Amino acid sequence: MKTPMEIRAANMAARDAWARRAMQSAQDASAGAVRGARELELERWEAVRAQLTRLRLPWGMESARVLAAVAAHRAYWRPNDVRLLVLSESQVWTREVELEARVPLAVFGHEHAPESFVRLVYCLGYGERDLVQGRVSGNAGTPQFWKLLAAGIDPALCAQVVERTQPDLLQRLAAKLAVLEALKARGVWLLDACPVALYAASQPKPKMAVLAQAMELAWTAYTREAIAEAAPRAVMIVGKMVHDGIGGRIRAMFGPRVPVQWMYQPQARRPGAEHAAGIERLRGMVAASGR
Image (cartoon, rainbow, N blue to C red; front, side, top):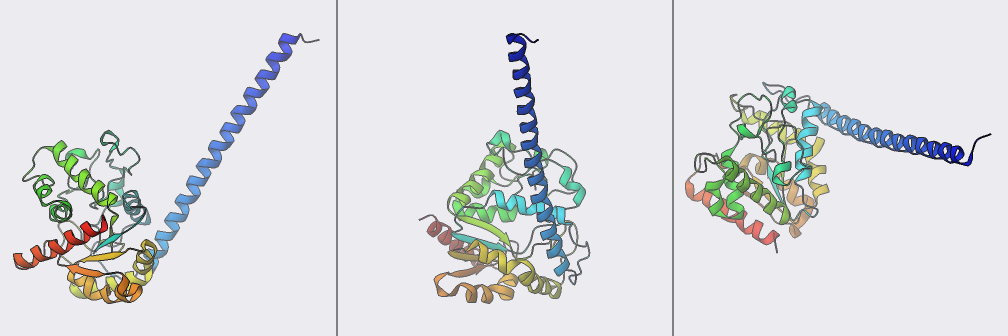
């Protein structure tokens, strides 16, 4: 016959075993939910890719894993209330193997930011070789777009976000994060009109007919729903091609209550006065979004 002490010890051991099983079950359920969400996300991007199969790009189309990684970076920087949607063309092509490269931001106070490398302005490793842990080929980034975003917040920041004028890595990263944080705080979110890359590093630019086809196919497969879901109060389109392709549709979608403006891409070969005017329009819309 067991002593009272032995009975208590057996009961404690049973409770401990039950607690361990319950914890393991909860962990398994959580992991299963994460896996399930991940699988649904990949299925969603596979469906988008299937609707874009007629689009013939020299470098092909990114995998669903790459598109999901790009979307994760966008989601991290998305404001709760999208007051201004800045709509550009597309990200730059990312090879699937490059997803293994890490871009840790925990030391900068963004421990929950996605770490997979992608060629997107929302990924701080794009254009910042010394921040990336792992191998990526050709990582020049898009400094002209960073200058445009910085100008929308404060023109004084423009010199701080590009390596040529701010060679100190930490100061440059701090300035870039300040720009992204300010945009998010003011309700400004960046979205691409085409979910797959229309450009690849060191590759010729696609013909205008291909870019126009991309806008058309993407509108049905992705863009219309993404813009409607964001429900912005205003839209700034970056790029004449994007504006000519879907600007009218966006205006028809929201009506006069949502102003839709456009500006040339920062690398477009246009007079400086036209670029300056576009930046002033962007600054005005960003300022209005923060009120």
